[in-house]
Image (cartoon, rainbow, N blue to C red; front, side):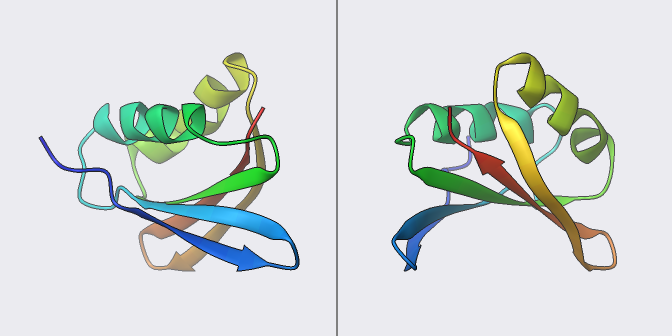
Length: 88
């Protein structure tokens, strides 16, 4: 089992938590993201670095079903994306 890797960054009184799931296979990116989101406060956002593929395709809709909102999705480089998710 991989350890969750995440770190905190404060910017303009908004705290963002970063989670790297680039090397994880489906369904682990979703599982780790859900665990990290459950640990957040309302004023925090989670930024997930994720590889292109099944996990990236299904993550936004699965999170929305749980009441979370993906507020930003951007391509960082070939095959690597960043999802910014607002805590509920």
